[in-house]
Image (cartoon, each protein chain N blue to C red):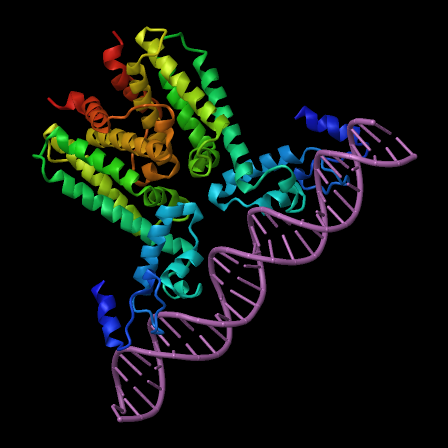
Length: 220
Length: 220
DNA sequence: TTTATATGTGAGACACTCTAACTTTGACAA
DNA sequence: TTGTCAAAGTTAGAGTGTCTCACATATAAA
């Protein structure tokens, strides 16, 4: 980030960020927290959330294994940051993919599902993290908020598709059906359960199909 | 198992299995492999698949930490056994819950979904394991076979419900929709995403609803 | 009875998480 | 300009965990 560069330049003997492998010459790192989160994200993708280790993130960031504990309470907190970033990205992508379609169109609901699955497939490690962390993070405010936000979009769109501006219990039910479905689909996909049983998946067709089935008697 | 008892009695000075805490007096354990698997299963439930440790299973079984490696290649293989057992139980439960309902009844499909979710809720640790293990077990024959078997039941029932004895591609599609849904629902449930957003879930109603929506135009 | 094999133990190598005490540096007040 | 402090590094090491190796012991087979 630009903050890194700024600090790097203040320090006359500035070297490149050590994520690139170059040994740094400054004692202070400049942007360690952010770089550790990024290293964590990369490793979670590469090895999966289970096989991530703080040590390896340290190696990648070029600092000692004790360094992270100046920025994070523990390993779990590092992972939490990555999960949080993932949820923000997913939320953002949903907003973006919604834009091209007219309000109330079924296509908007399909778009949401597409984003959900695409995110899972593109960042399976982070996606797993976002849901596998729950045991350790029972009551994490930020995570719960973001989760509610994302689900809120779905509820909103279901209501809109029904022609209403306010969300009724009925909409929550439908939104929940949709969510369950794409959630399951995502996991089955990234767990390779689909390729095993030669189901040639036309994702878009399936998403349309499901959206129709779920919204059918509300469309009128 | 009865095999345990048999061996225990052969050894005259037989003591109770040490899973119960009693120190054993025989050098040889008698049934360590099975007891380790059981200890693993328990721990996976208690602490979750992530926080399971071989050491702790050893403590629980009352043997040294090196002992398991006479029976299992590594930690992952121990977990695999537990996952396998889980899949067998799930399969068995499906068969059982199918029996009370007449062939072709929609209720059979609902029953399958109910078993799926019930299993996940009853044994969340093992359930997670069954699907979280895939990174390490890309090509495990037994696991894939069992998985196919379970999904096979669903396909079978979908076809039957449609009034056919042979499974058509159309049935596979529907079976897949159903599977995705209950899979997602199960995970959302055990991850506590439902209680957070006060969705008072009438599981049976939802399962009926979904089964109807998915089977609707095939019923005729 | 002897011997071989299966199954246990103990010691230890190596990795990982996290803490404690120390060091360096940049920022800021005097 | 300089002195001091807090922030953010480092090294050392305790504690836990996985897994291997050499050795011990009981069971089964000869």
